[in-house]
Length: 242
Ligand code: PGA
Image 1: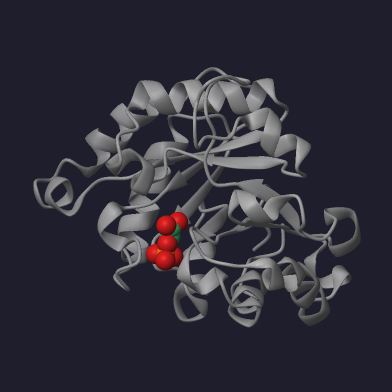
Image 2 (image 1 turned 30 degrees about the vertical axis):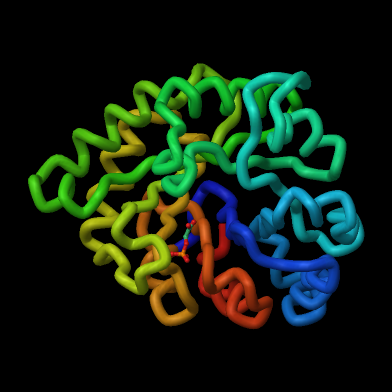
């Protein structure tokens, strides 16, 4: 069944990759032809060191994004990059509030400020939310995610939500399609019908089709399986036609 929102298949390379990886979007494009991917957006978020060297999205059809940004435009913030810098280096998206960044200290307020900074720079923020295993076991998953959305999503024209249960990230454990459907339906009630809601957490070729087929799943945020272009292609191929 066709879905109304264009799926977004996003790979987060995290702290992986060297200069030889800048050619990966071309490998992806060679494996997955332009006409086949007309119905979806494919995004790679490499380390900031590679962003400026990555192949031009106009040529490969593969969009580029940052993995995090500072809330300010510039200044004395050693080790950080601003949303404007990411934009200047070729990004059109930026992930904010990834659970690894939240675990390292990003509060909802900080994520909110980063999402605003992204919009200020002309980037679309991918705002991540998700409960811990203890919160799910305590029956609080929906409450936690709703609170994160309320506090970390500013009023913006355009943004993407990524629901990533913390216990499913990099663990090989995936939430069941029933749990994902339930959470995405709950998130849908909190955001506009135009907002894409991605699922993330051990998405791989074997489980992508069932997850991407769910009504309110509009794409995936992929860690491990997005490092290899053949598995990213397999996942992209499972996306329903928009
Ligand atoms: P994973 O990572 O696919 O390796 O679980 C997902 C993420 O961190 O976005």
